Length: 115
Length: 111
Image 1: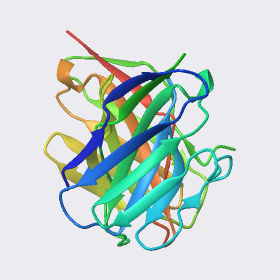
Image 2: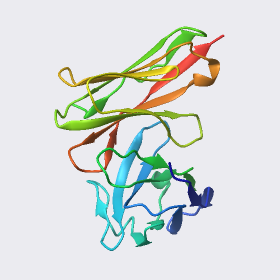
Image 3: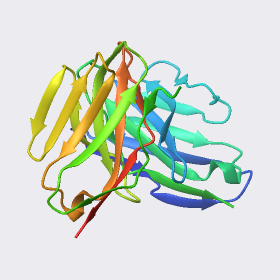
């Protein structure tokens, strides 16, 4: 497994502002993923972030709203832009090594509240 | 039809009993299957994964896969109050690394 940390662990933000969430892994990983978990809901994949290439976004998520960086094999950031109360959610990063037999491990999450 | 379906529960079982959690998936090309446990306010924690038809046991947990029926289950033997959590079924299809999650089943183990 991998040790994954996220910053911040929680934040309360004002409408119209942006927040950048950091995800740090203790070892090099091929694949990093960003998920959203809205209150009482399951996990929804926002995008897949591979080092050296642009992130791949899922249907319903766009780069202008959720820009992602992946500067190296141990780090990624997700920015939630121009926030509205509907963006209040838990944001989770996860990692795997990209092999078919691999498993995905999750960071502790960032709890975001938008007022 | 949802890609991965689970009964949302809550599933209530007495302490010491067997809890049976079920999951169905729609894509026959799915190759690997995962069970995560999520305590309230925490992130998902991997419990089991299974790739081949049949049973896979790990301690008190048994994962069962039936690809013909597109069905995967998780059995928890000797259920403990600490097992009370939401259990998420996740499916990986093809060579893509991304997982598709079910909505989760909330398990309550009562004293």
